[in-house]
Image 1 (cartoon, rainbow, N blue to C red):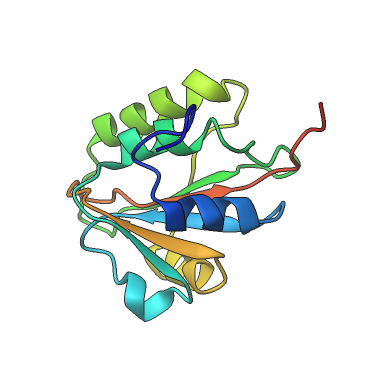
Image 2: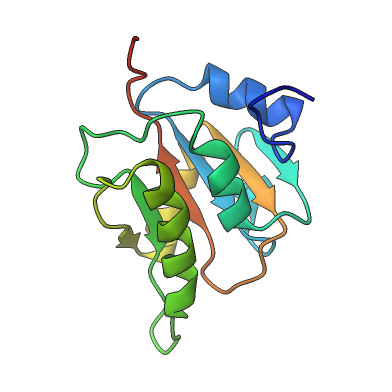
Length: 144
């Protein structure tokens, strides 16, 4: 255990977050996501929900403020309905640390898969909500 680091952050996840550069992306994937198919570096956070992981990760790095949206989620397939509470819960976690972050952008399912292929890492979670995947784009760490 480390002081100031959430116990939800595994040693492997902490190393990945540290190694990511500005502009790199990490996919927080729901339990149904084909992470092993599309991700080149896959980590496990089984049993953990994405809002809790966002609250653990976001104090550790800044979101990219040089892009239109550093937060990307999958748009629903035609005929599917989104549960608005999913995005609300994610946004609540984001706003706790980075309230000036632009709105979450939604992209097509297959575009999301392609984006995952070029991501730095995929974190497979225990999230079970439909369309629960989110991509975080890391920004430039400020020097204090």
